[in-house]
Amino acid sequence: MPSPDRLVILDRDGVINHDSDDYVKSLPEWIPYPTAIDAIARLSRAGWTVAVATNQSGIARGYYDEMALAEMHSELNRLVKEAGGTVAHIAWCPHGPNDGCHCRKPLPGLLDEIRVALGMESLVGSWMVGDSLRDLQAGETVGAHSVLVRSGKGEPTIAKHPELAAPSSATLVFDDLAAFVDWLLKEKE
Image (cartoon, rainbow, N blue to C red; front, side, top):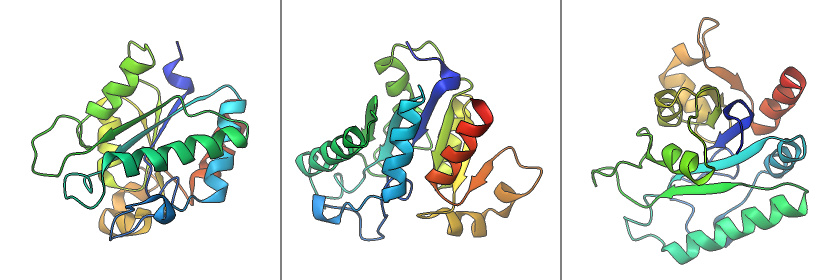
């Protein structure tokens, strides 16, 4: 069972791969940041557990189906494995914003799924890395440290919520996932 303080939970679109206002609907549209794949592998090789929590409302909207999503996640797992790492679990929400589910971030359902899948009692002290306020809010509900990346929708999130990047903020801000991993491995090893 992983220790919460050695667990990093990642949002997907904008953190691991390029995001799109038109949704990432197919494997050819799923374009990972090369530095993100390497960062996940470096974390894994250093003994950290990495999981993914991703809202995928494009399924509810009919833009793509679960098979297309599975292809993207299979490719993510393949690339990370090829780089020498592992993704322990991928939790995803197929619902739209008005479906009333418990899993769509900012609600903690996806993080609870990760906790159960990994056999953990708590996520307090884990790390939640995202590019939107709802990612950080989901992490806060389970006691995770908040990390905002400027990639994806990170810059617009900071523009809309400048307090997140204030020196007094508990949220750590990094240019991208690779910069966070550089810091984490230096700071916590």
